[in-house]
Amino acid sequence: MPHLALYTFGILKSPLADPAPLTREFHDSGEAIYRKISQHPGYLAHAEAADGDRGTYFDLDWGAWGEFAVPTWYGKGRTVDTIALAATLSLWTDLRPAFDAIYTGLHREALNRRYDWFERAGHPGYVFWWVSDGVIPTWQDGVSRLEHLHDHGSTPHAFAFHHSFAPDGTPTRIKDIGPKSDQAR
Picture 1 (cartoon, rainbow, N blue to C red):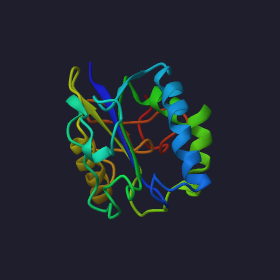
Picture 2 (cartoon, rainbow, N blue to C red; picture 1 turned 30 degrees about the vertical axis):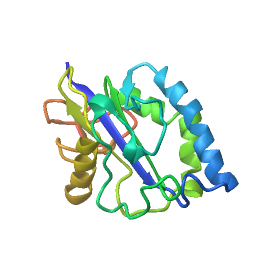
Picture 3 (tube, rainbow, N blue to C red; picture 1 turned 45 degrees about the vertical axis):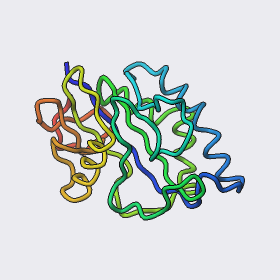
């Protein structure tokens, strides 16, 4: 059975190393949010550094998740002192559980504050795509799918909640999200 891959990417207003209260608050909230999401029904896994998060995104060993990559529009730093991004890569059983995990609880609270921490961008902040059972998506897969979504809009290759697709490529709609013209799931 296929699984749903999710890549998220945002550019922070200040580097992660910035001692400002808002940056520290964002960084400190991540562990609790991940812990809560990882207990959500439908969650399967997320990219974790094999060496226990000692370093920056760019120099960590991500194991089967591949070498860390960022979209072409990221123009900030890549060192401990200058890196200003947040990115995730995860696997889910389906759209509904991912939607419920993202738009409830601690993660919803964080989303409500996203403009405190993140720059407003003309680029999508997340992308979904289906992978075959047993396939672990890579960071580069996420980047290429996010850039595809930005350039072409939602397609079976790369899509967002509101214009989503089933594993067979047909348009789908989850109750309470997506345009009414999509097929009900």
